[in-house]
Length: 295
Length: 242
Ligand SMILES: Nc1ncnc2c1ncn2[C@@H]1O[C@H](COP(=O)(O)OP(=O)(O)OP(=O)(O)O)[C@@H](O)[C@H]1O
Ligand SMILES: [Mg+2]
Image (tube, rainbow over all chains, first blue to last red; front, top):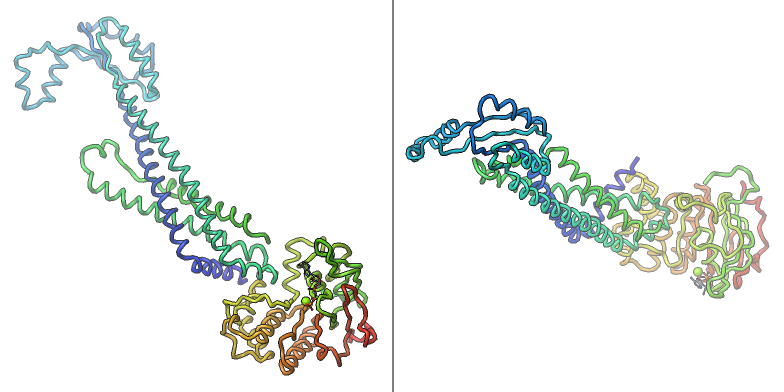
C-alpha cells in the first residue's frame, strides 16, 4: 500500500509550493493560541485562587460586651442553627490583646499605654466550606449582626466580591480571545488552503481526468490543515510555557504570585487545547476543500 | 473493467446518442455504435465533424443530450463519482490539446497517471522508461514539457494515456503534429498495446496515412452523423476475437 506515502509526499509538495503563506498562517495560529492560552491560564489560576480564598473565609463578630461562659453554648447553638459552621472561637478582650502583642513581637512596647482592655471581644465564625457562595455569606453576616451585643461583623466579602468581578471580567476576555482564536484559525487556514488549491488548479484538473480518487486529492489538503493546527498550537503553548517559566523565575518567593500559587495547565488541558486547535484547523481546511474542489 | 467473456457484449456501446452544445450546436447526432474488446476503431471526419465530442462523451467529460452510453456494461449516466474515478484509471485518453503540465517534467507528467492508482515508484520508473523508449523520447525524460516541441508533447500525452496499460485507449488526433517516422512509432505503440495488453483503442484522426492500410474498422463522422467510411466496407467483428 503506497497510499500513505503518496498522501504524505503530496502534502509536502503543497507546503513547499506555498511556503510563504504557510509560515504566515503558522504564525497566526501560534499567536492566537498564545493569546487565548495566556488569558485562559490567568483565568484558571484566578478560579483556583478564589476557591482557596473562599475556603479561608471567616466571619468576625465584634461585640461590645464580653460573652460569659454560660452564654457561650447558647450563642453557639443559635449560630449553628442558622448555617452549618465548622468551628466557632470566642475571643475575650485579654485573648485579643495577647494575640496582638504576640503578632507585634518586639514592638509590643507601643501597647504599654493602652491597657489590656482596649480591644473588643469577638466571636470568630468559620463557615463550612460549602458556604462559599457570596450571597450566603452576606446573609450569614447579616444574621450575625442580630446577635445580642454584636457591634460589627467583618466578613471580607467586599474583597471577595471585587475578586469575583475581576474573575468575571477575565472570563469575558477569555471568551473574546477564544472566539478570536476560532475565527482566525478557521478563516486563515481555509484562506491558505484556497491558495494551495489555486496554485494547484491545473494539476487538480488533470488529476481529475486521470481518475484520482477524492481521497487522493483531498487528504493532502486536509492533512495540511491538521498540520497547521498541530504545529501552530504546539508553538503557541510552548511559547506560553516559556513565558510562564520566565515569570515564575522572576517573581517567585513570597508575594502576589505565591498567593495565587501560579501553575501551568495540567497535561489534560494542554492536550485539549492542542486537539481543539487541530480540529478547528481541520474544519477550516474542510470548508475550503468543499468550497473550492469539486471532484 | 471486468473482462467480459461473452463475445456479444461490447466494451463501449452508444445508443442513439445526441450531443447538442448550448444553445443549438449539434456536435453529435443520433449515433449508435458498438465497440468490442480488443478492437481498434478509427474515427475519421472533417474538422468540426464531432470526433472530439464523441471521445469526450465516452470518457464522460461531456454528457449526452439524449441517448445512452455504456462502458463495460455500465450506463455512464448512472455511475457514481467514485465509479467514474475508477473507470478513468482504466481508460487512457490522449487529448487533442494534450492537457499536460508544462511546468513539470516528462517523467512527472507520465507518472501522474500511475500515481493516482498508487503504483510503486519502481513500477512507475520502469514503465515510463519503457514507454519513452517506444516513442523515442528517452533523452527527454527530465525535460520540462513546456520546453518540448509540439510533436514531442503529443507523444508524451500518448505515453501518459498508455501508462496504466488501459483496457480502453482513446486517442484524439494522435499524429496531428508528427512526421512520418514519429507516426510510425505511434502506430507501433497502438499495435503493441492492442496485442500485448488486449487494449481496445479508438483513434480519432483525419490522418489518412494511419488507417489507409489497416485491417481494422474505420468509421466516418460527418456533421455529427456516423457512417461506415465511404472507401471501406465495415469489418466483421469476428476478425478481432482471435
Ligand atoms: N464546448 C463546446 N461548446 C460549444 N460548441 C462546441 C464545443 N465543443 C465543440 N463544439 C462544436 O461542436 C462541433 C464538433 O466539435 P468537435 O470538437 O467534436 O469536432 P472535431 O471533429 O473534433 O474537429 P477537429 O478535427 O477540428 O478536432 C463543432 O461545430 C464545434 O464548434
Ligand atoms: Mg477534435
